[in-house]
Image 1 (cartoon, helix red, strand yellow):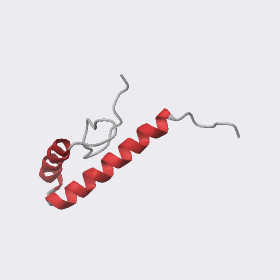
Image 2 (image 1 turned 180 degrees about the vertical axis):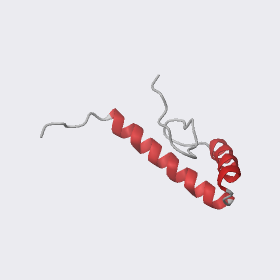
Image 3 (image 1 turned 90 degrees about the horizontal axis):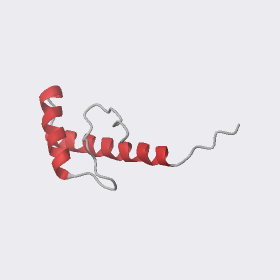
Image 4 (image 1 turned 90 degrees about the vertical axis):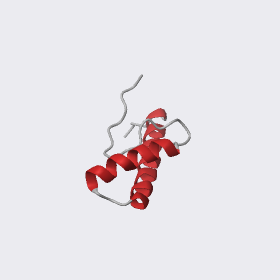
Length: 68
């Protein structure tokens, strides 16, 4: 098992193919305590993080063409 990519305020673990509302809620609670931000902002932020995380995983799965 690969180590998870560390992302500040990220909702982990993110099940492959989607992110769970429960994970977002947990993330929001932590982020609100830490950053004193609103629930709506946190939810949007977590969704962005989840999307970014999934994209990173996809990039890792696809072999990069390193020929220059």
